[in-house]
Image (tube, rainbow, N blue to C red; front, side):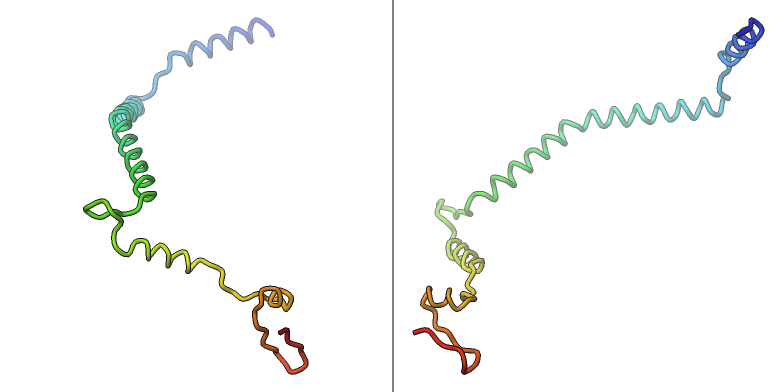
Length: 121
């Protein structure tokens, strides 16, 4: 680079280094910075209490669901065991075996679909 080009670059750099934003833009920048600082202070103030409350709720929901409901004397509430047994029975697979061999092995009676099929004793 020649000296003239370098001198022009230095002059342009020095000229732009002294530029400042207009008063309106400067005010908007300062207002945005103040708003962000305020939000940061609020978030830091509420961070730990909210985290602690969330931890307590999570702990209570996990431990509350894993224990059986108890009455005043500490025994299981009436009907709780029956409700659990009913829920277990409703989830059981009670479909009959599908193949003839499975029916024969389990001793399930076979109802023929038509007259040509054989039945097992």
